[in-house]
Amino acid sequence: MLDVQSTEGTVKLEAPRQRKLGVGILGAGTVGGGLIRLIQEGLAHRAVAVEIKKVGVRSLVKPRSFTLPDHLLTSDLKPIVDDPEIDIIVEAMGGLEPARSLIERALRAGKHVVTANKHVVSEWGEQLHQLAAAKGCSFLYEASVAGSIPIIEILKEGVIPDRIHSVYAILNGTTNFILTRMTESGEDFHAALAKAQELGFSEPDPSFDITGKDAGQKLSILISILKNQHCHPAQIDIRGIDFLMPWDFQFAAERQWVIKPLSIYEEVDGFGFACVEPVFVPRQSVFASARNEYNALCLDCQHIGQQILIGKGAGELPTASALLSDLRKIAESPGRPQTLRLQTEPGTLTQFRSSIENPKSYRFYVSCCPRQPEKRRKIYEVFSIDSELIQERSPCARSGFRLAVVTKAIPHSELFRILDLVLSFDPDAEVSWVRILEAI
Image (cartoon, rainbow, N blue to C red; front, side, top):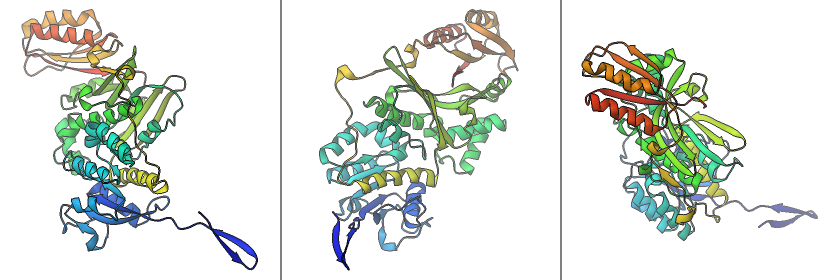
């Protein structure tokens, strides 16, 4: 409401000052610390009407990248959630627990929640959305996927006015950095991983990244929003990158391909197929130009074609900026709760199926190192039926030869039939495969 004041016969209208909402931040590491800097140092494009009331940290004596009065720091997290002066809880701790319990506690207390936690959102998002809706609170998590790229806002708000039937994305900066090093420097997997850890692009325990689980959680969040129904990470086929060898990169380079860690959702014949896996893409692909810690997304639309987004997917300020974006949405409309209402009626839900059931055909690269040289002719015969190319490459230490195969366009089911047949001849053969995506 506006105040009306009389000054020398004129009327001046003054808008009342907006009350700053109290914010409690759980976690002040890279992301939480970046958010504090954005707020305290005015690094954002424009100020947000919030005030930091408390910050929960593991250690009160650890050096920080930001400056706050000591009385705002605490290692006791529950009182932050329960503080009546705090309107919004920002969860930047990571991991499943205690983050999930604290988010639930905050929503039950009627507080808005902003989080960067893909683990919690991907596995418990459906329940937390329902709780937020019941309590009239906002539950926002733009920072949980793709860092500075506002992909959740784009999908949730229908910014692209067309039906999106496929999503191809690089969602994990660690694996993209590792594969970039293996491509450009010729390093093996372990050397590239060590470099990623040295530069801070990987956690000391990188298993969640290199196994594909991190990207799987992020993809499940995007699918849940895109389809307006919960997609659990267990419904996504996930392969890591640690099976890749230098000769795979050499073969790719010879054929003008680049290996990238893609998260993929495709709709075929009314069913949804989701996976995380390394793939071969053309060197001129937009994904080939997304290097190191950068993320990239390609939304394949029914009428307007492919829409491309690229940006930094990790780091202090890129991810913190996404947290601040969600804070701004709440601060500007605190009385208008923002959360998804996922559909649950069985008849309206998309069925998610395993990639082996995907009827689409692709070419595949297959590397095979038999351990039984006497089976060589039989293995050649198996591959020759459905293949465009079979090359004998640099020898395997075990068998003296290795096959590099590019199949014809076949569905996944046919690929697995071929691999099963090869393994029936030589159960100990070292066989790996990579899908070739040529239209992105």
